[in-house]
Image (tube, rainbow, N blue to C red; front, side, top):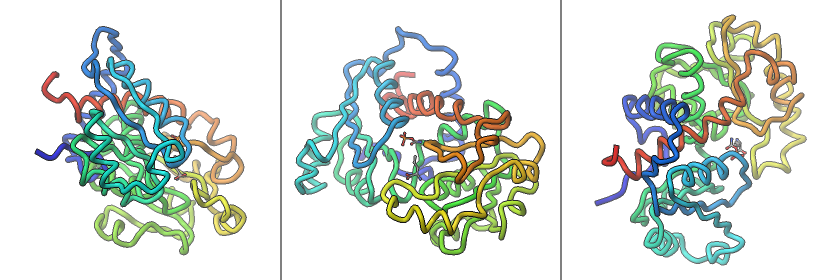
Length: 302
Ligand code: CP
Ligand code: NVA
């Protein structure tokens, strides 16, 4: 039987997504050191790109659950010397219980999933960052309740985070406003699949109207460092600042997946202000992913 993977939020139903959020909240508030559902199990973590939150949350989560995690970089494995993905996926999955990958190309993760005999988790690709959305949505639910019917505004690059926000809008049924420069729109195929849940606006101020949550991300993602200067020019009118937050609903929250560049995509007063929930959001990577690991690896033990 094929294992259940987590490559995209579209792999989840709305009920499953909400159950994961509920479970993440329970795990956060009831840490029981004797609850070790993954005792003896191993998570392989393959990182082609840097990480603080993703690595630490998965490694700590496995440890809390009685298992362990292996950090693997292409530099130190045969993956970096061109061993075929298919062979690597078969070999690695024969020795571990789950594989998490953070890769440049989304196809690397989908190919791994095709040949892996154990669940594969997308820990970020150039196209999507679904684990971050588990944490973001848990954070919204904790602060404001269910997000169904609410309005979220994405300001900035139509990147991997933006794509996963579009998917979250589809699965959890909220409206997503997007304000981004024309040359940096999210992929048309992803936007079209979301139908009328996604609306584009010419300016951040227009997009923020009636919003319950304002979200942004860096202007240059990992791998785009050489475009930094060009992007600073393209995105100069797309900063989330106090004026943008004022245009949103009075109780709107601010989120950012981090790491952030204060003074670029977000002003210091907003990211460090009282509407910002960035540190809850970061911490929730741990709790949300523990819920995910439990869901993928030990559904029957609960
Ligand atoms: N938000 C996020 O994925 O952070 P890291 O790059 O530190 O893992
Ligand atoms: N869009 C960013 C997210 C980092 C967590 C990147 O891909 O670098």
